[in-house]
Length: 431
Length: 112
Image (cartoon, rainbow over all chains, first blue to last red):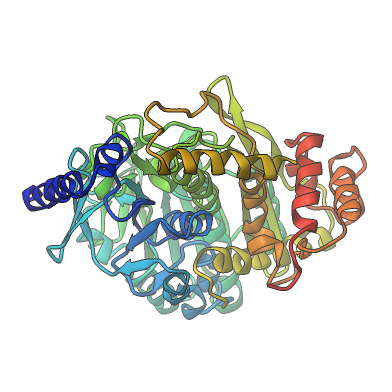
């Protein structure tokens, strides 16, 4: 399928050789697929991919940048939980690609289905084959269907995961709104690692906010495959303060791990055989890197992508960079902010490499805001640097537990401000 | 100045490529400091180039001395009243990095 590309590339090279004596000199330097500055193809228009596309172009406008993203409007997972609380509309989560096009990036709305790393091509579902000098994948996550017994893709139509923003979000919201007062909302929370470590608990908070004001006799049961979670103390303090005993969290050690899902009957069975019946069942299933990562050969046995932590180039396939949730980047969490920070470092490394320069020293940051109730926000933030060849926390931590109301209110405002800033930074959009 | 020396080095590399003289890789083994990489971590919250669209303060175009003073204050054991996350973040940066950031954002216009 890539033969035509190889041929045309060879023909092009041959023609250069014929044209002049300078051709010989040209052949001894890197030859780029498109023009002298090179061609970077980015797969995925989310927090990692759109950032990478923008920052490669920003750093060197002569580099040709093509962004492949199926959706014409990208819906963000961050802040989508607020939709369940009735605090944010679906449309506020939507970002288009016009501003990226204005920045000189070619945006193609299609699925990348094939990668040939030796021919340096990517194939699209529509049949097109693109050549690249550097490929950056930001494919996010895919689900390990049926890794949790009974939870395949069909089951997600009855018991939504809503862990990718879109129709699943709408479905879970509809179910929540149709739930009778006094009903039970069960959330099945996964083991580590998974996308957005504080996400399930922020969602529980926002569902609780909705229930408290609309269906106060209802209950939320979180069945967790873990014994600890992100910002746990802060979440539990906030739950007690705003929602009393509306939210019950069952950790692994209290038989919280779900072994089997019956989506038709909205029941789940725990490790030790207890059956729980839900009125609304939200299953957040085990995950892995987005499919194209496996196709490109950059995943390892874990299903995730090992990367060089100073550039986010794949350790397995040279010239292929991977950022965001798909990567093994611990201690950085799988978050939109992390993806954005990683993409900026990868963009600098790519631009420098195309120019024959070393990668700049990396510095990464992550900040995750979570909203427990309106005007009550909490955060976790870290700086990451290289230490002994690995990514390490240079500083950081969570909001203080003893903070007053004005501190929480400020962090709620900063969370919203963060969302607006990062959306502008990535898609150039304002909501 | 650092930025200038980067540009100079880039200029040399480009002319070397243009003459076809760059036959051996000249890339140094160790990576180099680039303030724009460090500063890019600020944009996530403070907006592109430090121009904030919302309640988090804009840092672009503020006087260098004020930015540096504020960054050092965040990093100290007694951060200014109202500090939320910046204390936790700045502690991971060196004083040289704070100096570079203050200079970088002071040189950007507050308006695009």
